[in-house]
Image (cartoon, rainbow, N blue to C red; front, side, top):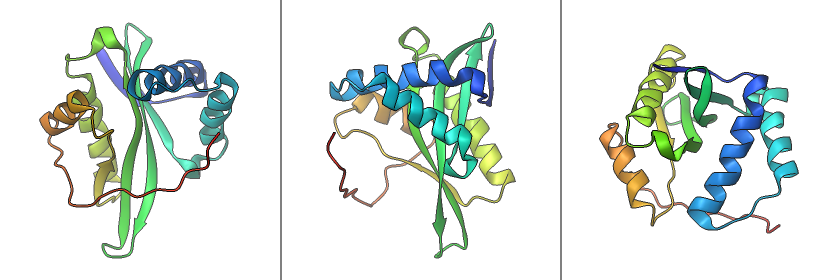
Amino acid sequence: MTEIRKATQEDMPAIAEFQIKMAMETEGLALLPETVEDGVKAVFDKPGRGQYWVATSDSKVIASLLVTYEWSDWRNAEVWWLQSVYVEPQFRRMGIFSKMYGYVKAEAERYGATGLRLYVEANNVAAQKTYEAAGMKSGHYLLYEWLKQG
């Protein structure tokens, strides 16, 4: 039985491990474990940065995602961004993300958020199909960014 819940500090090691795996799997990036661990902890230390959610099976964390918040003056409401989405490979194609998405969407609506957004690697077709199957649509915006290297 899969359960969805807000993450606790006890989930930090699994969440950090998932992020390291995802970076390698999707972009071939080897992240520094200490940096990722500190980054995950920083969300728990300052909840305004976001909130992690996890899926568990038999009390084991099998998936996680991070929600961060964007203020939309156009809508006078928050938009919740889904980030750092990861499902353990042996649990993929089993509806885990869809269940997490439905749960987080209901929470967003309960808190008065006006929508959910995420970005996905342009070549990650499997993830794109998963998000579409959950009811999300590709937006009409392109993402531009500046990121410090290293």
